[in-house]
Length: 359
Image 1 (cartoon, one colour):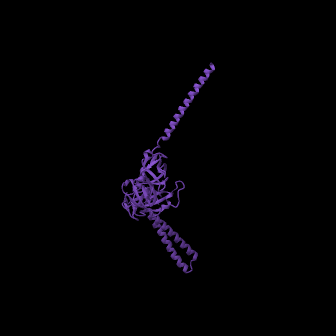
Image 2 (spheres, helix red, strand yellow):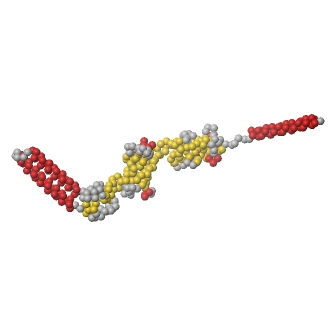
Image 3 (cartoon, helix red, strand yellow):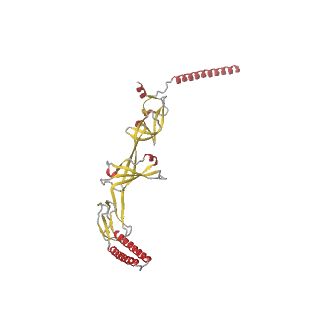
């Protein structure tokens, strides 16, 4: 009796397990059918544009400090007191105009003394020459007197030069700087007295990256701007390029001459100079195609199967609503320009642009 009960219970358990397995199988089969019948994710509707090529004007803007083409610190070459000052700050002078003089009484006396000594030696040479012709004087004695004349002449020239150094003149035409000296002031050798600048033409030295070396030529036109004269452009021209590249910065120095006929510019001013280079053919894309992520820039390139690929690009100059592409894309590539909000890498797109072009 007990055995019959055990067999009955076992049969019931097996039957229940079989029923559960059947319904589980049916559920899985139904789920699989539902999954297989689920529609594929629809493609994202976008508008695209082709990466185009066009000639793009290129330029390079650099900053430097102005200096005048001719600039000098007038310094004393002798010791003495200032006797007279003939100029004032901002005065225009011409080459050779007197700027100031130092006391010259002692120097004039020294010149007079040297002149008298020289004249006496010349007189003696004349007498020695007559005696030599009569045989009363040897050639050696005559030559010795000639040497004395030469020495006297050198002393006279030196005295005249020292006197001339006390009359300080403009070495070139220019504008006088601030006058910070006074009459009666004692000055020493090498002491700065005045600044003189030729403001008619200014020079601007800038450091150019070495990759631009092939572009640098003396016919390059330059436009410069200064903060002091907002809205005003100053024309310039590249006139010289240094013979070597700096080892540390990998830059080379270039010199730009800037016309300053209006005398608006001053040495030491900070200026921005823009050099224009010959146009080059570059790849360009619309600005609205760019996705920003920190310091990186991306676009979505669409392949022939209509799949969008997130592509990092390196951008160059902006031209209105276009921007040049230095790397990351090729001319002829197709990129998404509208519909970026829903875009992600690898997504299928429905290109409305190509459909419109096919009509």
